[in-house]
Amino acid sequence: MDTRINILKTETLSDNWYSLNKVTFEYQKRNGALETQSREVYDRGNGATILLYHKEKGTIILTEQFRLPTFLNGNSTGMLIESCAGLLDEDNPEDCAKKEAEEETGFRISKVEKIFESYMSPGAVTEILHFFIAEYQEGMKVSEGGGLDEEHEDIEVLEMKFGEAYEMIFTGKIKDAKTIMLLQYAKIHDLCTKSK
Image 1 (cartoon, rainbow, N blue to C red):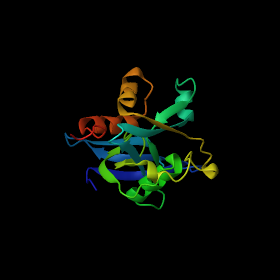
Image 2 (image 1 turned 135 degrees about the vertical axis):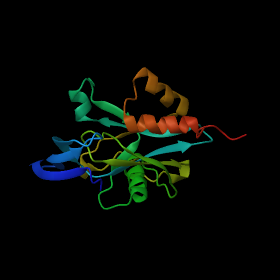
Image 3 (image 1 turned 90 degrees about the vertical axis):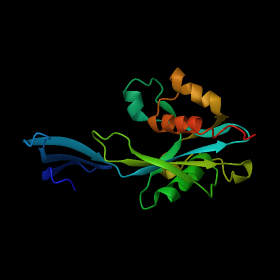
Image 4 (image 1 turned 135 degrees about the horizontal axis):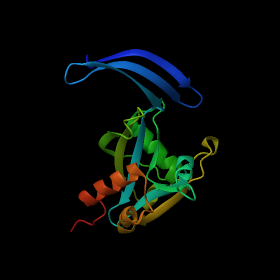
């Protein structure tokens, strides 16, 4: 831990679903001065997300579901197109990515590749998100997907051409950060282009 930071007090503001804490700490600035600051920090655990792609067909699998926070902040329908994702809970990131792919899309993936990890909202949320990619084939489809009833999920599975999905970043139809990051990675690395 950085010796320039001294946690003075942590107060739990909410522990209803995940934890919202108010943390008071001393921070030594670059000029050597000590400053006391307070921040609210939301801890919902870490997560994993995965982009399924089919190189031969040039397609990807995304999902669409209702996201209340987006509805409260200008998304008139609250529906969001995303790569499938979930919290790790007790799983390691790789197992979580496979589990979420099957629950949400119906594809049972045996081999995934981790490409990077990222703090998604470091000013207020502790979460690290682990990013994965995996190729899918038709024979891997084991269910309709759609999420779990006990988690109140109502997810539509979308198979689309990569180019169509990539263009949706610029038309504003895809506004989810993790999905944009995965689509940019797929574009840079030509994941959906047949090898010659």
